[in-house]
Length: 330
Length: 206
Image: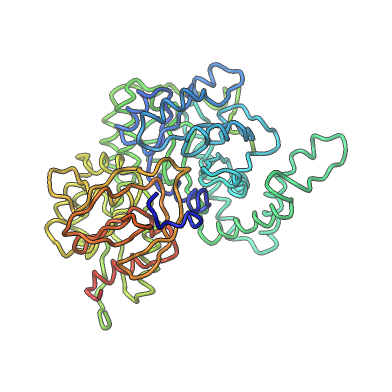
């Protein structure tokens, strides 16, 4: 750092920097990669960031068992060979995995239901970290709770590893409808919704043999949490959208899937298994980037669809799944 | 600008990145300056002539993605945009972060649009992103700097001037009416640089 800079005045890890980082991803495609070579393919296709992990969700689903944070060597290897931001997944509520990812130099942590949750009651207290977090949601309540906990970016959960876009659409529509509800209710109705959302932090109460009442959470007292939930809901009502960048994720496999979600008002898309479980990953990646950019132009989306050089990934029906990842971590 | 009734058309490069915060900042600046603006989204080459902009904004984001999307034949925006800007040396242009990279290093075989050498992502990783006050020499005052995985100017040409300093480090370079900043004025509440763009476009800048 050159002289004359007052180091005391330099601030790192602020909410503005975290949310600002997420804003730089707008209009982008974030791709799951499991090797440095795949990271290069993603970068060359125009990904705005890569998600470094050991197995894509489709393989995690097929393998079963407990899915954890990836090995630091794998993440480090991808960080060292990639010029775009690198994200990595920590288990829901696993502060220590997230701390390791921050130490490794990861640019954003995905606190992800694709991995097996570590804490059945609480997510990570994300304001305790310098780097930003993205979290999944299935509805407005989950989105507001994650933002209150410090998430700088929200994504739909969808149903990862299925190549089936139906859950991502379900979650995008539900969030949009619940935002519309928030704008139509009176003050009393608003308070009822706020209470319902805050009560999502009380999961531990029903697990006890005794009549415990949660007073404190890892994010502060219940009263303070409720006040922040009300504040966030007010922002949502004013903006007609979530106050953080909102991406779609979970089941996107084709250029038209990406365009469909962008048309729903999403700011961008995560593609997990959809790239490297397709027959020709490099062209699938380029085609999805192109469709995401030109989502409003049917001719360009058609052009992107025509670029597909092989089959997209195989898909799974949601009704036949053994594990529904979207139900993890509400 | 008093008495001006014409609407100022601002071309916003929509290839990728933090575009909506620029729209919000431009609209706040327009209100403060009492200038009426229309923001025209530039996604492909033909959008340029259709918009015929009085000023252009290149937002922050990932420059690698912007190059791929903007050079792809489906868009063709970037080569057309660079030629458009070169053809009118008085056209006001604001590039922030990745936008500054594209202006300083257009990679289209033509001259740079900003006379400076720039290194991508030169401060480290997201944990090294920072907020810090800086000197906006072009505005003659302090400005809240927001640096996110920011690039760094390695040098600038004699025909260019310093527009902003963080300590002794150059973080803003001006070449004619083109301005390249390595930070994000659109993320702060201070509209100084956006007002500069609008006022320069109306010919009212001092």
